[in-house]
Length: 637
Image (tube, rainbow, N blue to C red; front, side):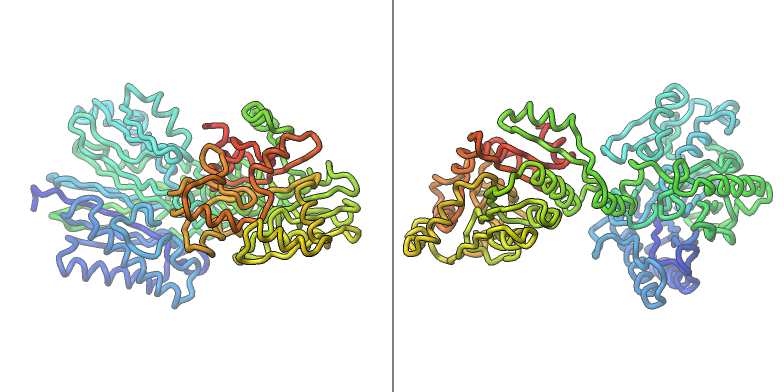
């Protein structure tokens, strides 16, 4: 097989820590070895070994199936799933935390485990070094890779070895915008440093020798926070580097780690700390769950077999690096929760900090974005007032709560004693009412803006919110009108005519001073027009989208141009609109133009952007309260 292309695959995952995060249980490693031995026995793998660094299990495999092979990746996935089951039996910490989905779908990339793979025809001698790190992120490899393959002060071979003198190419990934650069050194060195110096965003994924494009190094580039959208664990990357005979020597490859440079990760993935090179035995990050550790496993590959590992960082020459790392760790720890020990806010977006920030926003004044407010007013001149707030987190629930707080503050600023207020339905207005200060407003008259009978989430209907808001104000008058299934608006009004007092209250709905409105989107599980469509006709969000619906306001469906679908020829929409008993969109538009009426839309969240944009085009309100993320999206179109 000497002329066949061999593939070296290193696939790792944290599927359960033994005593917190510090190491891997022997039974876990034994089970992984059993899986690898069986795979070698049946010919799937040429060879396989298992190592660990901290609580990460590393599957080191050779085979002839090529990179990104579905069978190899499925084998690794199934191995980690079996390890997860064992971890749960042993009650290990964070069992299965890197396994972000429930089933395998062709490739473990994007599913949680970290992957580094490269293929090559074995040379006369094929030494490789596999670096495995714990309590850090893929950007930890940027500085060492630059020094190994671009810095002649580190790698003498760049100057004196003719096979390396032309230099190397670096493939750099922008993990936020999914862009890629190919930069050559030495000629593009300064450009390369512009990018890879920002190691939280730009990652060196691959290095190739320029003279023949032979792959010299491959790093894992998976960031769990970006995959999952939240903090689920540290990324704990792996790196494969080929050595000697046209590549840097083993000593040149190891030399950058004699300097314990600062990396992100450490405790809770939220701190900077030194990357400490350690022996296999010391790969147990314990102090403050760290400091971050890296091991180096040296192998000679011979006809697909892994001869090793040699524990390369067990060399006493790295004792000084370890001493320096401990000194740096102590210095950084003295900063406590302050930067630069703690990561900057942008880097903390995918840690647990946004959850804490949401609590803080509950207690404090909400930051507003005056720049976005002015831009929205210029874009939509019919708006008298715009308030844009920073929600502190991207998820819809946090956004709804933050804009609801601002809506409550605005209402308490502008509503005079004795005002008549109409309420639409929905979760955002529910939150708004919870934030109102009891007794702050006086003499209110509260009305439901819609009486459409919706059975989904009855606690969020207009009548329910009227009752809820009235409990805040002992002197308020709450008008709760019956919601009668099966009637059209005309039939409902005829029934109201039998009771003059009810009819009077019903007609007053259209003449309230303030209307509080939510904006519905198609996929939201809320008591809106989509819920009515499902309840009455079994229609889905996809069905409504096919009929031109992009959103709704007070149970009126709206198209992408912001027009109400009142005159639609679609029989389903006609049937549903006959069931809507509410102040409909045309009535809202007319009242929003009146100086003596205030129609307040409180809506936000990236999921709702299309619906909000349509309602802004339709001019159904004259006051708009939203979040900064939504405002930015609205202004981009």
